Length: 325
Ligand code: PEP
Ligand code: MG
Image (cartoon, rainbow, N blue to C red):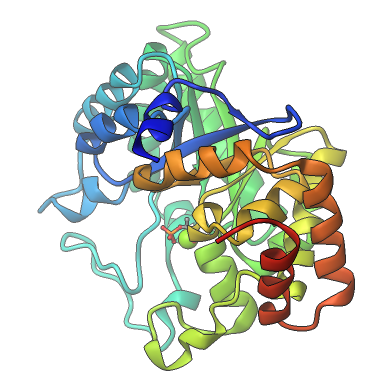
């Protein structure tokens, strides 16, 4: 198995019947890049930028951020890096930013909501990213987008930052791809309208499941409601993928579900383009992918959505119809 996986480090991510996918890695700090390269990921699908803020006693300056992003982009040697803008607030406090106390921090003032309200925090990050984009392919994605208006506001601020920087450096940032996380149920339902205004989606299943089932992702008492294989949830994911493809944009997944072995054939059957996961599961996933036929996967996921009632039914169906252990 290790020998097979070793051969896959430089191999493409391709199904048994020759369909091409992409497997990328999630990282939390620039030091994680070594492992990403070693495990053969095709890029970074989620760079959680929170570490810059949480390990600091001050708001990180534009230059400090620029250095961190540039380092990651250069070390990725031409492979694409997707940076998520600050996803913080509520449960993840910042020492230098007093936030309101809330009863439901996961439903509160956080992520893009906080950033749109604090341009003095949001703009330095966007400026640092635009400057870093000179060193390799970069995508930026906004977390926790609920509405088209929020997305337009975020893009407007991005465009302002770009225009300011282009005064001195014409063209800088023009190659950046912009996307959003789909992690709020309404955004998933509204994927068709959102897809018109971005280059890509990335489905954040950790939060999308939490909000869809109304079950706190950190609570053991309700952890039985973490059900990525629930047929109703699968049809929500299908809706997002179909809407993205109808508008000719790519769709990634960067929550835990993307690296789940039971979910993999279902997601391949739905046509998910990019699978972003912890570096340690990249090779296992690429190996599994190479043994799966997408036509068979499509039949199984259609059967799961149309004929299964529970996540257990779906797991049994996957187990019995495909050779997965
Ligand atoms: C998610 O919500 O699925 C996700 C990838 O983001 P995070 O786990 O950082 O909330
Ligand atoms: Mg999330």
